[in-house]
Length: 224
Image (cartoon, rainbow, N blue to C red; front, top):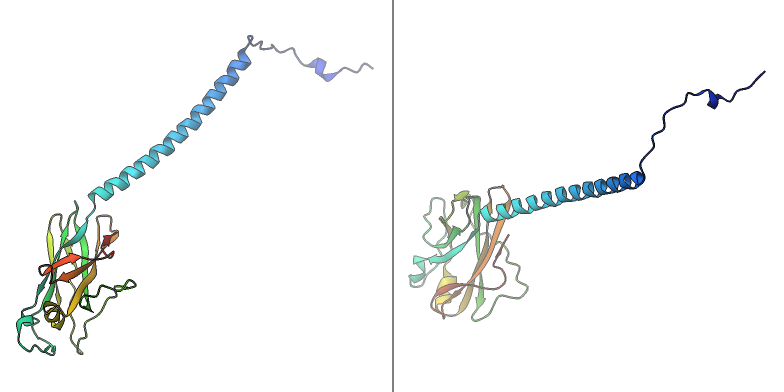
C-alpha cells in the first residue's frame, strides 16, 4: 500500500508575488494611518475642551453680577432729643432703616435675590477685630412679630432697594458724636441664568470724620 502525504493532494494555488518594497510601503501606510487616527482623536478631545471653555467663558460673560451700589441710613429718629427705642408691637410702622441699594452689573437677570445686613458697633476709633467672623445677627423681636424677606428679580442695569429695619438707632446717634464706629456688613444671595447660586459679601464703615460717608472696609468685600 502506498501512503501519500495529504499536503501533496492539495491543488496548486496561485501565489501572489508582491513587488519589491511593497511590504515596507504597506507598513508605512499603516503607521501613518495609526498616527493620523491618534491625532484625530486628540484633536476631537482638544476641540471638546475648547468648546467647554468657550461655553464657560460665555456663561461668565452673560451671567448676572450683583454688587453694592450704596448704603444709606434713613433714620429720622436719630435726631430726637433723649431718644429711647420704642417697643415694637404688631402693626407698628417702623421709621428707621438701613437702605442697601444693589445693582445688577451683568448681562442677564438675577433671580431669587435676598439681602442680609448686620452692623457691629466698636468704640471709636477701634477697627474690626482681625478674627471677626461677620455673623448674622437677628433683631430681637417680641412674640408674634416678624419681618418679611422679599424674593426679588433684578434685571441688567437695574437697582434694587432693600430696606432693613433698624429698631434701635443709638449706634447712629453715638457714631455722629464720634463715640463709636459702626460697621455695616452682610451678603447678597441670588441665582444666575443657569440657576447657579451666587453670593456677594460686603463690609462698609460709616466714616463720620471723613465726611459722613460709607466706605468699603477690610477683606469682606468679594463675590462668587
